[in-house]
Length: 403
Image 1: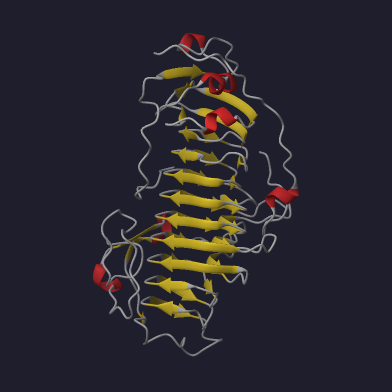
Image 2: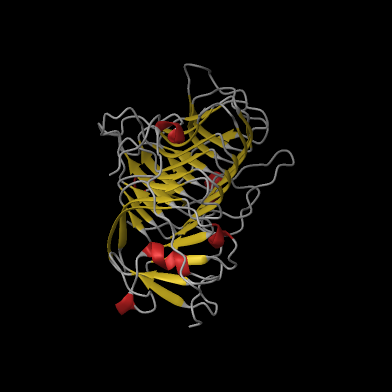
């Protein structure tokens, strides 16, 4: 390994995490304390494979970082990391940690990778990041994970967030191939005041309403954010909504893309998950939202004709808004008290019918009969490039799956 540059300490400081930083439909701060998706994810940068080599960190480490036997603290490892350095985490409990900004890291190309190798559980009670330009791979977080404003160009891969949520408040953030589950009265992923965010190939599930803390649980909530892509995820069993766009500070959201996802509300109704919309897209401060090739089941779909709204090639088990701007979609059921039949049925490529999926109770909404999801497309709108399985998406199939 190349000799390390002189150590530069990464400042560790408590962050101010007040209710204002967590604004959205869930209100104030969240509490402090399975199988992963097979959906396609963005390719991982080739970080950690250059000349900089590997250094080592462990809980309570105080060594020189150069070998597993002389592992150092994570903050110290980041302080000496060079472009392409891989920081390998030892197994253990790292406790609560707030890592402050280090402008030196922002300039490194390729970025630093902090990784818990396969089979190693490196667990954080709570993790607050102001550190920019770092890939975090294989971490387990059981408290709240904050990606704060200074943590631009953060990439999260193969994470397990268990019992709480991930809060994204920065720019150029990617979250892929991760599992988020088992939270109470908190969102799985909350994106607020963020820009250029990709959420792809993740599973978010089982967020209930078991705590009386003034918050409620969504699988994914977005507010006051721009250029956000939600692609190829599996969302299910979240008390309030699988996906919701909320008012936040009413600064508005713009340029959102939701495609090739399986999205469910409360699959099994219990005291902790009694309702649950599959999706709620009614916030009037939102514009330029494209929702295409998704499969929505086990909960209502609420879609208003917002500015620049495209809702195309989706499978909708139940739609509650009769004037939803739907095209090229399959609608199984609707709010019969509000309208005898939605006005869009029978036009713009829309039809009724029931699709056949593998195992909705288990969140497996893959088609078992592709013909049950075929449509006769109308207009010039294009489908998503790929299905949730990663195969090319046919223009005459609605929903996220090609079977």
